[in-house]
Length: 376
Ligand SMILES: [Zn+2]
Image 1 (cartoon, protein in one colour):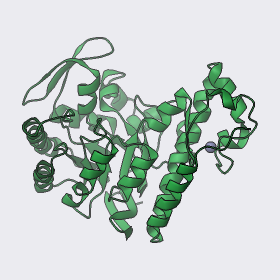
Image 2 (image 1 turned 180 degrees about the horizontal axis):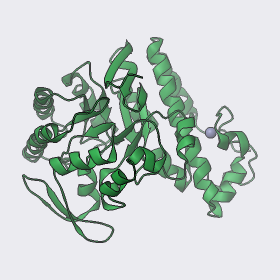
Image 3 (image 1 turned 90 degrees about the horizontal axis):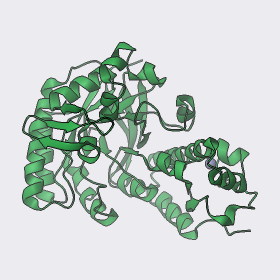
Image 4 (image 1 turned 180 degrees about the vertical axis):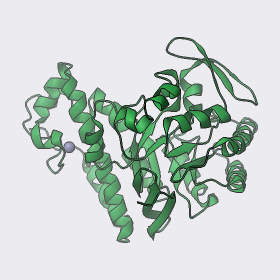
Protein backbone atom coordinates (compact mmCIF):
# COMPACT_ATOMS: atom_id res chain seq x y z
CA UNK A 1 0.00 0.00 0.00
CA UNK A 2 1.30 3.40 -0.96
CA UNK A 3 1.62 5.64 2.05
CA UNK A 4 2.28 8.83 0.11
CA UNK A 5 -0.62 11.27 -0.06
CA UNK A 6 -1.62 11.78 -3.67
CA UNK A 7 -4.46 12.79 -5.96
CA UNK A 8 -4.84 11.19 -9.38
CA UNK A 9 -7.42 12.45 -11.88
CA UNK A 10 -8.63 9.52 -14.01
CA UNK A 11 -11.08 11.40 -16.24
CA UNK A 12 -12.69 14.79 -16.74
CA UNK A 13 -15.99 15.86 -18.27
CA UNK A 14 -16.28 19.62 -18.68
CA UNK A 15 -15.12 21.09 -15.37
CA UNK A 16 -15.95 17.85 -13.50
CA UNK A 17 -13.27 15.35 -12.54
CA UNK A 18 -13.17 11.81 -11.18
CA UNK A 19 -10.15 10.25 -9.56
CA UNK A 20 -8.58 8.87 -6.40
CA UNK A 21 -7.05 10.41 -3.29
CA UNK A 22 -4.54 8.15 -1.54
CA UNK A 23 -4.06 8.52 2.21
CA UNK A 24 -2.30 6.63 5.00
CA UNK A 25 -5.56 4.79 5.71
CA UNK A 26 -6.58 3.99 2.15
CA UNK A 27 -8.10 5.49 -0.96
CA UNK A 28 -10.95 7.95 -1.42
CA UNK A 29 -12.79 7.74 -4.74
CA UNK A 30 -13.77 11.19 -6.00
CA UNK A 31 -16.14 12.93 -6.28
CA UNK A 32 -16.59 11.79 -2.66
CA UNK A 33 -19.23 12.36 -0.04
CA UNK A 34 -17.96 12.12 3.55
CA UNK A 35 -20.54 11.28 6.23
CA UNK A 36 -20.14 13.39 9.35
CA UNK A 37 -18.99 11.56 12.49
CA UNK A 38 -19.26 14.53 14.77
CA UNK A 39 -18.33 13.13 18.17
CA UNK A 40 -16.58 9.91 17.16
CA UNK A 41 -19.68 8.30 15.66
CA UNK A 42 -21.75 8.62 12.51
CA UNK A 43 -24.96 8.80 14.49
CA UNK A 44 -27.17 5.67 14.46
CA UNK A 45 -24.67 3.70 12.32
CA UNK A 46 -21.96 1.13 13.03
CA UNK A 47 -18.68 1.95 11.27
CA UNK A 48 -18.94 -1.22 9.12
CA UNK A 49 -22.45 -0.17 8.09
CA UNK A 50 -21.15 3.26 7.06
CA UNK A 51 -18.46 1.51 5.02
CA UNK A 52 -20.99 -0.83 3.40
CA UNK A 53 -22.91 2.16 2.02
CA UNK A 54 -19.80 2.93 -0.05
CA UNK A 55 -18.31 5.72 2.04
CA UNK A 56 -14.50 5.82 1.85
CA UNK A 57 -13.81 8.67 4.26
CA UNK A 58 -15.63 10.17 7.22
CA UNK A 59 -15.34 13.54 8.91
CA UNK A 60 -14.57 14.14 12.57
CA UNK A 61 -15.17 17.41 14.39
CA UNK A 62 -12.21 18.87 16.24
CA UNK A 63 -14.40 21.17 18.33
CA UNK A 64 -16.59 18.35 19.69
CA UNK A 65 -13.74 15.89 20.25
CA UNK A 66 -11.45 18.40 22.01
CA UNK A 67 -14.22 19.20 24.49
CA UNK A 68 -15.33 15.60 25.00
CA UNK A 69 -13.56 13.21 25.49
CA UNK A 70 -10.46 15.34 24.77
CA UNK A 71 -7.80 14.91 22.07
CA UNK A 72 -5.09 13.78 24.53
CA UNK A 73 -7.33 11.00 25.81
CA UNK A 74 -8.10 9.82 22.26
CA UNK A 75 -4.37 9.88 21.46
CA UNK A 76 -3.58 7.78 24.56
CA UNK A 77 -6.25 5.31 23.45
CA UNK A 78 -4.62 4.83 20.05
CA UNK A 79 -6.02 7.68 17.98
CA UNK A 80 -9.46 8.36 16.53
CA UNK A 81 -9.40 5.45 14.00
CA UNK A 82 -8.94 2.85 16.73
CA UNK A 83 -11.09 4.70 19.28
CA UNK A 84 -14.19 4.76 17.05
CA UNK A 85 -13.50 1.58 15.07
CA UNK A 86 -13.13 3.20 11.64
CA UNK A 87 -10.11 1.94 9.69
CA UNK A 88 -10.54 4.13 6.59
CA UNK A 89 -9.44 7.71 5.99
CA UNK A 90 -10.62 10.43 8.38
CA UNK A 91 -10.77 14.15 7.64
CA UNK A 92 -11.04 16.49 10.60
CA UNK A 93 -12.21 20.07 10.46
CA UNK A 94 -10.19 22.73 12.27
CA UNK A 95 -12.76 23.54 14.94
CA UNK A 96 -13.01 27.10 13.69
CA UNK A 97 -16.47 26.87 12.18
CA UNK A 98 -18.05 25.29 15.24
CA UNK A 99 -16.37 27.65 17.66
CA UNK A 100 -18.16 30.41 15.76
CA UNK A 101 -21.49 28.61 15.51
CA UNK A 102 -21.81 26.68 18.80
CA UNK A 103 -19.72 28.19 21.56
CA UNK A 104 -20.56 31.19 23.66
CA UNK A 105 -18.52 34.20 24.76
CA UNK A 106 -15.98 34.03 21.96
CA UNK A 107 -13.09 36.44 21.83
CA UNK A 108 -11.26 36.50 18.50
CA UNK A 109 -7.79 38.01 18.37
CA UNK A 110 -4.89 37.79 15.93
CA UNK A 111 -3.59 34.86 18.01
CA UNK A 112 -6.75 32.74 17.94
CA UNK A 113 -10.11 32.29 19.62
CA UNK A 114 -10.94 32.04 23.30
CA UNK A 115 -14.34 30.51 23.95
CA UNK A 116 -16.64 28.83 26.44
CA UNK A 117 -17.65 25.21 25.92
CA UNK A 118 -21.34 24.78 25.03
CA UNK A 119 -21.26 21.66 27.27
CA UNK A 120 -20.03 22.98 30.62
CA UNK A 121 -19.04 26.61 30.07
CA UNK A 122 -15.32 25.97 30.68
CA UNK A 123 -12.90 28.28 28.90
CA UNK A 124 -10.89 26.89 25.97
CA UNK A 125 -8.43 28.21 23.44
CA UNK A 126 -8.07 27.43 19.74
CA UNK A 127 -5.39 28.80 17.45
CA UNK A 128 -3.76 27.60 14.24
CA UNK A 129 -1.07 25.92 16.37
CA UNK A 130 -3.42 24.24 18.86
CA UNK A 131 -5.80 23.12 16.08
CA UNK A 132 -2.89 21.45 14.24
CA UNK A 133 -1.80 19.76 17.47
CA UNK A 134 -5.30 18.48 18.24
CA UNK A 135 -5.81 17.13 14.70
CA UNK A 136 -2.38 15.43 14.89
CA UNK A 137 -3.30 13.84 18.23
CA UNK A 138 -6.56 12.55 16.72
CA UNK A 139 -4.54 10.95 13.90
CA UNK A 140 -6.46 12.68 11.13
CA UNK A 141 -5.48 11.71 7.55
CA UNK A 142 -6.60 15.07 6.19
CA UNK A 143 -6.12 18.05 8.49
CA UNK A 144 -7.88 21.33 7.79
CA UNK A 145 -6.14 24.69 8.26
CA UNK A 146 -7.58 26.84 11.06
CA UNK A 147 -9.71 29.62 9.64
CA UNK A 148 -12.50 32.00 10.43
CA UNK A 149 -15.67 31.16 8.52
CA UNK A 150 -16.79 34.61 7.38
CA UNK A 151 -20.33 35.27 8.57
CA UNK A 152 -23.04 35.85 5.98
CA UNK A 153 -24.03 38.33 4.77
CA UNK A 154 -20.78 40.28 4.94
CA UNK A 155 -19.89 43.55 3.22
CA UNK A 156 -16.69 43.63 1.21
CA UNK A 157 -14.63 45.27 3.94
CA UNK A 158 -15.70 42.75 6.59
CA UNK A 159 -15.20 39.83 4.19
CA UNK A 160 -11.77 41.13 3.25
CA UNK A 161 -10.62 41.60 6.87
CA UNK A 162 -11.86 38.13 7.80
CA UNK A 163 -10.30 36.45 4.74
CA UNK A 164 -6.91 38.09 5.36
CA UNK A 165 -6.93 36.91 8.98
CA UNK A 166 -7.68 33.39 7.70
CA UNK A 167 -4.76 33.64 5.27
CA UNK A 168 -2.37 34.60 8.09
CA UNK A 169 -3.77 31.68 10.09
CA UNK A 170 -3.32 29.41 7.03
CA UNK A 171 0.39 30.25 6.99
CA UNK A 172 0.70 29.52 10.72
CA UNK A 173 -1.25 26.27 10.21
CA UNK A 174 1.21 25.19 7.51
CA UNK A 175 4.19 25.96 9.78
CA UNK A 176 2.67 24.14 12.76
CA UNK A 177 1.57 21.05 10.77
CA UNK A 178 3.61 17.91 11.45
CA UNK A 179 4.46 16.22 8.14
CA UNK A 180 3.79 12.46 8.15
CA UNK A 181 3.60 10.11 5.12
CA UNK A 182 0.08 9.79 3.75
CA UNK A 183 -1.19 12.71 5.82
CA UNK A 184 -2.33 15.94 4.22
CA UNK A 185 -3.05 19.52 5.13
CA UNK A 186 -5.75 21.43 3.22
CA UNK A 187 -6.02 25.21 3.01
CA UNK A 188 -9.41 26.93 2.97
CA UNK A 189 -10.38 29.66 0.53
CA UNK A 190 -12.55 32.46 1.92
CA UNK A 191 -13.80 35.73 0.45
CA UNK A 192 -17.59 35.42 0.76
CA UNK A 193 -19.32 36.22 -2.56
CA UNK A 194 -16.57 38.54 -3.83
CA UNK A 195 -14.67 37.41 -6.91
CA UNK A 196 -11.58 39.54 -6.21
CA UNK A 197 -11.36 38.40 -2.57
CA UNK A 198 -11.70 34.75 -3.63
CA UNK A 199 -8.88 35.32 -6.14
CA UNK A 200 -6.67 36.98 -3.51
CA UNK A 201 -7.37 34.12 -1.09
CA UNK A 202 -6.59 31.44 -3.70
CA UNK A 203 -3.33 33.20 -4.54
CA UNK A 204 -2.31 33.42 -0.87
CA UNK A 205 -3.07 29.75 -0.25
CA UNK A 206 -1.28 28.58 -3.40
CA UNK A 207 1.80 30.55 -2.35
CA UNK A 208 1.81 28.78 1.02
CA UNK A 209 1.18 25.45 -0.82
CA UNK A 210 -1.27 22.88 0.48
CA UNK A 211 -2.03 19.24 -0.39
CA UNK A 212 -5.62 20.16 -1.20
CA UNK A 213 -7.89 23.18 -1.13
CA UNK A 214 -11.30 23.72 0.37
CA UNK A 215 -13.83 26.33 -0.60
CA UNK A 216 -15.13 27.71 2.68
CA UNK A 217 -17.72 30.29 3.62
CA UNK A 218 -20.46 28.83 1.42
CA UNK A 219 -23.67 27.02 2.42
CA UNK A 220 -24.07 29.62 5.16
CA UNK A 221 -27.41 31.01 3.99
CA UNK A 222 -26.53 32.56 0.65
CA UNK A 223 -28.79 30.21 -1.33
CA UNK A 224 -28.00 27.85 -4.18
CA UNK A 225 -27.93 30.45 -6.94
CA UNK A 226 -25.34 32.60 -5.13
CA UNK A 227 -23.33 29.51 -4.20
CA UNK A 228 -23.25 28.27 -7.80
CA UNK A 229 -22.32 31.82 -8.81
CA UNK A 230 -19.14 31.52 -6.72
CA UNK A 231 -18.54 27.93 -7.88
CA UNK A 232 -18.63 29.11 -11.50
CA UNK A 233 -15.18 30.65 -10.92
CA UNK A 234 -13.73 29.64 -7.51
CA UNK A 235 -12.57 26.08 -8.40
CA UNK A 236 -10.70 27.51 -11.40
CA UNK A 237 -8.78 29.87 -9.08
CA UNK A 238 -7.36 26.86 -7.19
CA UNK A 239 -4.61 24.49 -8.42
CA UNK A 240 -5.98 22.07 -11.02
CA UNK A 241 -3.96 19.07 -9.80
CA UNK A 242 -5.09 19.18 -6.14
CA UNK A 243 -8.37 17.96 -4.59
CA UNK A 244 -11.04 20.60 -4.10
CA UNK A 245 -13.39 20.26 -1.17
CA UNK A 246 -16.67 22.16 -0.74
CA UNK A 247 -17.26 22.26 3.01
CA UNK A 248 -20.70 21.63 4.52
CA UNK A 249 -22.55 20.86 1.25
CA UNK A 250 -25.18 19.75 0.86
CA UNK A 251 -28.51 18.78 -0.66
CA UNK A 252 -28.33 16.24 -3.52
CA UNK A 253 -28.90 18.92 -6.18
CA UNK A 254 -26.23 21.15 -4.57
CA UNK A 255 -23.77 18.28 -4.88
CA UNK A 256 -24.60 17.50 -8.50
CA UNK A 257 -24.27 21.17 -9.47
CA UNK A 258 -20.99 21.54 -7.57
CA UNK A 259 -19.48 18.37 -9.07
CA UNK A 260 -20.27 19.71 -12.55
CA UNK A 261 -18.34 22.85 -11.54
CA UNK A 262 -15.20 20.96 -10.49
CA UNK A 263 -15.62 19.99 -6.81
CA UNK A 264 -14.13 16.65 -5.67
CA UNK A 265 -15.16 16.32 -2.01
CA UNK A 266 -18.20 17.07 0.15
CA UNK A 267 -19.40 16.63 3.71
CA UNK A 268 -22.78 17.41 5.22
CA UNK A 269 -24.91 16.40 8.21
CA UNK A 270 -28.02 16.39 6.02
CA UNK A 271 -28.38 12.63 5.25
CA UNK A 272 -27.72 11.62 8.86
CA UNK A 273 -29.61 14.45 10.58
CA UNK A 274 -32.61 14.08 8.24
CA UNK A 275 -32.52 10.33 8.85
CA UNK A 276 -33.24 11.03 12.51
CA UNK A 277 -36.13 13.40 11.81
CA UNK A 278 -38.01 11.31 9.25
CA UNK A 279 -36.82 12.87 6.02
CA UNK A 280 -35.61 10.45 3.36
CA UNK A 281 -33.74 11.34 0.18
CA UNK A 282 -34.69 9.35 -2.88
CA UNK A 283 -34.09 9.63 -6.60
CA UNK A 284 -37.60 11.10 -6.77
CA UNK A 285 -36.87 13.82 -4.24
CA UNK A 286 -37.37 14.08 -0.48
CA UNK A 287 -39.99 12.01 1.36
CA UNK A 288 -41.31 12.77 4.84
CA UNK A 289 -42.05 9.33 6.27
CA UNK A 290 -44.02 10.80 9.19
CA UNK A 291 -46.70 11.89 6.75
CA UNK A 292 -50.03 10.03 7.23
CA UNK A 293 -50.11 8.96 3.57
CA UNK A 294 -47.54 6.25 4.40
CA UNK A 295 -49.54 4.69 7.25
CA UNK A 296 -50.95 1.76 5.22
CA UNK A 297 -48.35 1.69 2.42
CA UNK A 298 -46.70 -1.76 2.11
CA UNK A 299 -44.19 -0.55 -0.49
CA UNK A 300 -40.56 0.24 0.33
CA UNK A 301 -39.26 3.81 0.40
CA UNK A 302 -37.60 3.21 -2.98
CA UNK A 303 -38.23 -0.01 -4.90
CA UNK A 304 -34.91 0.22 -6.73
CA UNK A 305 -32.79 0.91 -3.63
CA UNK A 306 -30.64 -2.00 -2.41
CA UNK A 307 -30.17 -0.72 1.16
CA UNK A 308 -31.35 -2.83 4.14
CA UNK A 309 -34.11 -0.31 4.89
CA UNK A 310 -35.67 -0.60 1.43
CA UNK A 311 -35.04 -4.36 1.11
CA UNK A 312 -36.62 -5.28 4.42
CA UNK A 313 -39.19 -2.72 5.51
CA UNK A 314 -42.32 -1.00 4.25
CA UNK A 315 -43.21 2.67 4.33
CA UNK A 316 -45.96 1.70 6.78
CA UNK A 317 -43.39 0.16 9.17
CA UNK A 318 -41.04 3.15 8.89
CA UNK A 319 -43.96 5.49 9.51
CA UNK A 320 -44.92 3.46 12.59
CA UNK A 321 -41.44 3.35 14.17
CA UNK A 322 -40.98 7.08 13.61
CA UNK A 323 -44.33 7.85 15.19
CA UNK A 324 -43.50 5.52 18.09
CA UNK A 325 -40.07 7.11 18.59
CA UNK A 326 -38.26 3.79 18.18
CA UNK A 327 -34.46 3.81 17.83
CA UNK A 328 -34.61 1.63 14.72
CA UNK A 329 -36.37 4.48 12.91
CA UNK A 330 -33.20 6.59 13.00
CA UNK A 331 -31.04 3.59 12.14
CA UNK A 332 -33.01 2.55 9.06
CA UNK A 333 -33.53 5.99 7.58
CA UNK A 334 -29.93 7.08 8.22
CA UNK A 335 -28.74 3.91 6.47
CA UNK A 336 -31.01 4.58 3.49
CA UNK A 337 -29.96 8.24 3.25
CA UNK A 338 -26.24 7.46 3.39
CA UNK A 339 -26.77 4.69 0.83
CA UNK A 340 -28.61 7.13 -1.44
CA UNK A 341 -25.83 9.73 -1.17
CA UNK A 342 -23.14 7.15 -1.95
CA UNK A 343 -25.14 5.80 -4.93
CA UNK A 344 -25.40 9.35 -6.17
CA UNK A 345 -21.62 9.82 -5.90
CA UNK A 346 -20.97 6.47 -7.63
CA UNK A 347 -23.34 7.52 -10.42
CA UNK A 348 -21.52 10.83 -10.80
CA UNK A 349 -18.11 9.09 -10.89
CA UNK A 350 -19.35 6.64 -13.55
CA UNK A 351 -20.92 9.41 -15.61
CA UNK A 352 -17.76 11.56 -15.53
CA UNK A 353 -15.64 8.51 -16.37
CA UNK A 354 -17.88 7.76 -19.34
CA UNK A 355 -18.11 11.36 -20.53
CA UNK A 356 -21.88 11.48 -20.02
CA UNK A 357 -22.33 13.83 -17.07
CA UNK A 358 -24.88 16.01 -18.92
CA UNK A 359 -27.12 13.01 -19.57
CA UNK A 360 -26.76 11.92 -15.95
CA UNK A 361 -27.74 15.39 -14.73
CA UNK A 362 -30.74 15.52 -17.06
CA UNK A 363 -32.01 12.17 -15.76
CA UNK A 364 -31.36 13.28 -12.16
CA UNK A 365 -33.53 16.35 -12.76
CA UNK A 366 -36.29 14.46 -14.57
CA UNK A 367 -36.69 11.88 -11.78
CA UNK A 368 -36.77 14.58 -9.10
CA UNK A 369 -39.29 16.63 -11.06
CA UNK A 370 -41.56 13.56 -11.30
CA UNK A 371 -41.79 13.53 -7.49
CA UNK A 372 -42.63 10.72 -5.08
CA UNK A 373 -44.70 7.71 -6.17
CA UNK A 374 -48.47 8.24 -6.06
CA UNK A 375 -50.19 7.35 -2.75
CA UNK A 376 -52.05 4.05 -2.81
ZN1 LIG B 1 -32.94 2.50 0.60
